[in-house]
Image 1: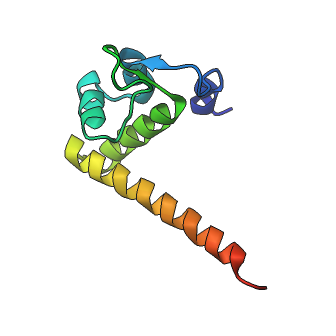
Image 2: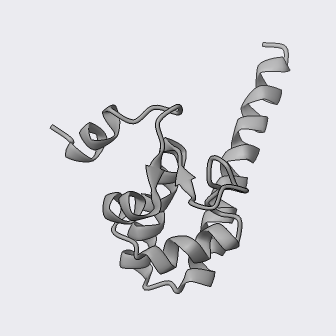
Image 3: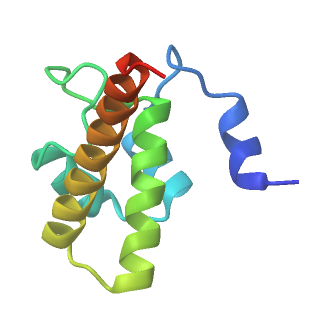
Length: 105
């Protein structure tokens, strides 16, 4: 059984986690999470709130960041760039699939 997925089963888009919980779930430090938030990679549910809270999507992004840091020894700036590029690649791949679906068979 995949415990990583089990950990997220209880978390839906309506339920949020705190900065400390996100750090615990992802393996990143709270400082790393703050820096990724400042760079726009992690977006709190209510950005104007005094205490940030994060959605399930942010947990997934933070865990990806943690794996990238571990595998490639990236600093926070490298993590932000890598995550931004991965997100852009996913968007472009989705757009390609949409366009391919419009082509006649």
